[in-house]
Structures are given as C-alpha cells and as structure tokens.
Length: 147
Image 1 (spheres, rainbow, N blue to C red):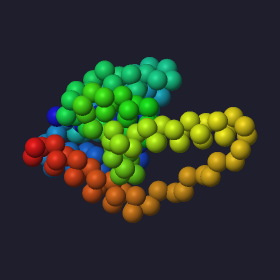
Image 2: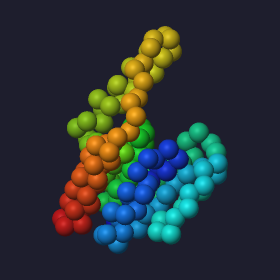
Image 3: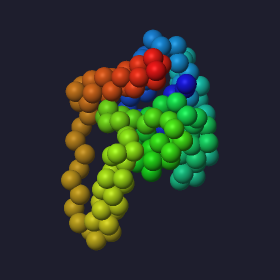
Image 4: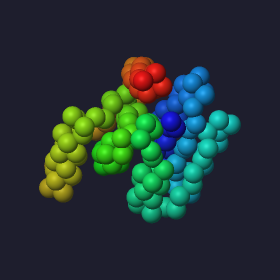
C-alpha cells in the first residue's frame, strides 16, 4: 500500500507525511514542473505542465489498496474503479456511493459558470478542516492496514 498525493494545490502535504511516517508508508507527491516540493520523507514525481498530466500519472501509478489524496472528483472516480481509496483534503472520503453525486454537482457548477451565474466562494481553511482530514485519513489507513 502506498499514498499518492495530487500535490499541486494540496493543503495537507505536511499532515500526510507525518501520519504516513507513523505507519511507515510510502508517499508519492505528484506535481507539475512549476511546483517545487521539498521533502525528506516523500518521493516527488514531476510531470509536465499539461492540464491532466498529474492526474494521468496518479491513475497510472495507483494499485488496488492504495490511498490517493485529491480535490479532483474525476480523478477520484478513476481511483475508485481501480480498487483504491480516495480522500479529499477536507477529510471527505470518496466512495462508490457518493462519487456520482459529487460529479453531478461539479457539472452543475460548470454549467452555472458558463451561464455567468455566481458561484459561492470557498471559505478559508481552518484547523477544524485539518482535524477532519487527520481523523478520516487515519481511519482509512487503519482500515487498509488492519484488514
């Protein structure tokens, strides 16, 4: 089992490394060449700056039982079909039961933006967001490791 991180805009990279280190799990941070990631723990896979290059690299390197951290619902849906687990940096675990609804909401928001409708802005990240991620991430790892 390994952890792959869609690292370009991931706000929980340090938390992932700390928790993975506690379990001695391999972590691969995937980012495009415009992002510099310095880590003494994680491997760093650099991809070109194509729009889906990081997602493709993550999907190609994901195996059943792996955990992927991503904000991208489309990538999460691919990961789930590979028998891996996916989690959002806010702590929401993607499942086969919730991914279709999330993808539909993404599509609705896209159509609203095309029609120039106002979409509610994201709120600032808080320590509560980090705590939710920590709890969910630990639970995912423990469910995987102790199956």
